[in-house]
Length: 493
Image (tube, rainbow, N blue to C red; front, side, top):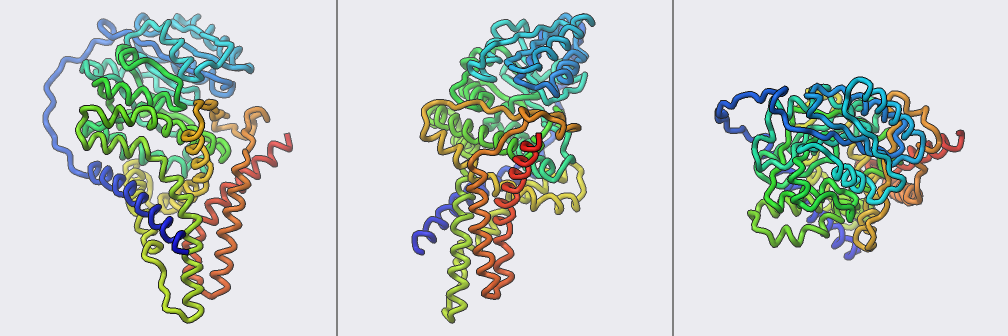
C-alpha cells in the first residue's frame, strides 16, 4: 500500500502544478486591464490597398459540409481581385465531385477559386497546406476546416478594418471558436465547456501578456512570409498548427488572438469521434514538445515565457495523471475505510482529501468562461458533471496516444474526425461512423473496477465516502456506454 500512496501523492503533486498554472492564467484573465488610448490610425480602404489573400480549405471525405464551406468562402465580402480561394481536396469518396460542382458554381459568379485534388495523402493536412502554399497568390493565408462557417465579413473585418497585419511583427491571427451544435446534446455541451477554457481564458491571456500562443488549425490568418520564415508546414507531428506556431515564435514572430471575433464550427457528435480527435491532439502535442522544447529552453525568451510554454506543451500530461489517480483513489479510500471498520484509528490520507481541492482552479476557469459567454448559471451546474466525467472517461485513450508519441518513431496516421453536419448526424453512412477501438474494453474494465469498490464501500455502510467515486464510475462507464451504442447503430446499417 505504501507504493500506491507514493504513486498517488506524486500524481497529485504534478496535478497541483498544472492546476496552479491554470489558476495563474485565470487570475491574469480576471485582473483589470489598463486602458491606454490607442493612437488614431486611418482606416484601410478595402477596395484600394487591401492585401492579397489566399483562403485555403483542406478537405478529406467531407461530403456533408464541403458545399457549405465552399459557399461561405465564395461569399466573403473582400475585393474579388485580391481574394484567391483554394480547395485542397485529398478525398477518396464523392466529396471531390461535390467540391468540383461547388467550385464551378462559384466560378460562374466571378470568384477566383480552384480545386487542387491530390490522389495521395502525403503529409496529411500539413502536406495539403504546403502543396497549396506553393501555388498560393496571397501575401496572407486564411485557413478554414471543412466544418467551419465563416461570416461573409470575416476577412474584411480582420484585415481591412482591424488592420491586424499592419504590425509587421504579427505572424498570424487566431479567432475564437464558436460551436454550431453546442446545444445538440449533453456531449457537445460538455465539450464546449472544456474548449471555452482554452478559447476564452487561456488564449486571450497568452496573447495579451506576450506568452507563446498557438494557431488552432482553423478560423485564422497567417502571414505567408511568417510561414516560410518558420520553415513551412511540416508533417513530423500530428499537430502541424501548434508546431508551426511555436517555430514562428522562436523566429521572433507574434501571434494575436481576438476573443471578440468568432469562427463557428462543429463539435464531434459522438464519443468515438471525440476520442479520436483528443487522441490525435494529445499525441501531436507531445510530439511537438519533444521536437521543440530543447530549442525553446535554449532560446533567449524570458524565463516566464519558457515556463508557460512548457506547461502548455505538456498540458496533456494531466490525462495520464488523472488515469493513475482513478486507479489509486478507490484503493486508498477502501483501505482507509476497512481500517476504520476494523476499529483502527485510520483516517483518509491527506492526499485523498486534496483531490477535491485540485479541481477548483479548472472548475473556476470553466465558470468564468461560461459567464463570459453569457450563459445561465443553472446551465453551468447542469453541464459541469458531464464535462468532468468526459475528461476522466477519455483519460486512458489519451494516455495510450501519449505513450505512442513517446515510444514510436513514426508520426502516425492523421485520423480525421468525420463531420456529419450537426443537423443530420444520424443520417451518416456507415463509412462515416467511427468504430470504437480496443480501449473501450479497458474503459469498461475501469468502470467495473470502480463499481466494485463503490459496492464494497456501500456494504461497509459509508455512503458519503462512496459518492466521490461515482464520478470515476460514471466517467468510464458513460464513455463505454456511448461507444457501445455506436457499435449497435453501426451494426444496424
